[in-house]
Length: 59
Image (tube, rainbow, N blue to C red):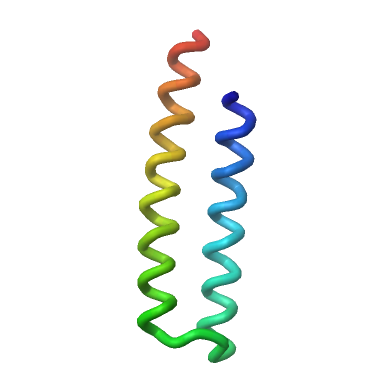
């Protein structure tokens, strides 16, 4: 399960990169970029917390 969460965390980071690229190339407007970036940030924080909890429970 931990590996699944770590993969999801990497995917979240990749998504943030794509959002940045889309914004920089005018593929999306600023409001869309900020909204989705904030959502990714929330998801990333939840994934980080989940990974920490899983690692503590394994040890």
